[in-house]
Length: 104
Length: 198
Image (cartoon, rainbow over all chains, first blue to last red; front, side, top):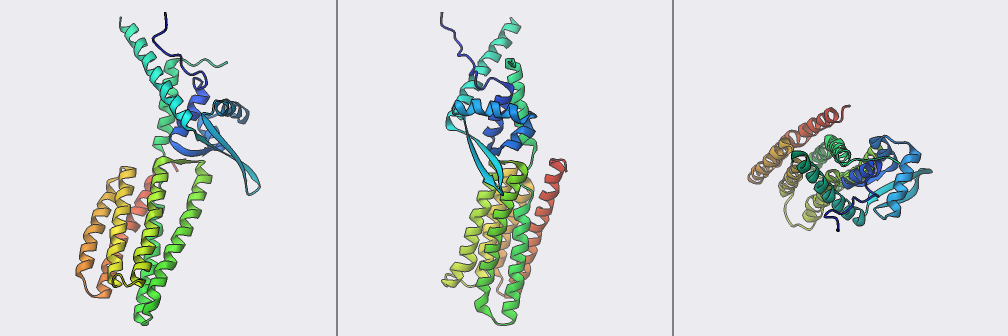
């Protein structure tokens, strides 16, 4: 039998990647340092998660130099926005079901 | 691999939304900047009227408008470097004040030069624009004070339209500027410091 619920997007369903996407959802752009500070992860860890999101085309990463220092600017793509919408819709369904199960 | 339950996912979403919601990015900078620049433009205007150099009045407005544009660009770049992100309400406020700068340049420099109206009407136009800027800022920040200031600017522009004496017009305008731009600018600055825990 086919499941009533769609599986949660595995690219988004991770603490760090979900946090990145939610922070980007509220900003036009954000830089690497901002995300690192807000989420509380190491450079390497954040880079790994950003790469996964970039591979899925959920975010756009732009690298440039400013006063000879490398800067990374990150923004959410339309595909990322749609994926998050789908993810939250499915998550809501799962949570609603879990709550109904608890009640019964 | 990290395991994330659905409840934890919901917590992450809530946490990240709260983090950015708590931060107030607008620090009253544009209120203070335009309050100070327009005050300087009025001082220059007063000097030019006293010295009968009327043709320079428009250029002083243009000069201070351009200074405002440059200062705003530098400020927004610095803020982005410091914060590391541009939030949508911030983007909206910046865009709105940028629009005001262009409108100010037209209303206080180009139109009087084209003889669209006399110089006393410049104050009426600037008051109308300042009212609009304060009103939008109040809506963006969900603050009553800038909305009240917008109403005062609009009442003020009717008074300015009735007055005929140049110095009386300038006097009323300076009062409007202090009450509606300088004081709210200081208030918003202190509020941002409090909200951002500095």
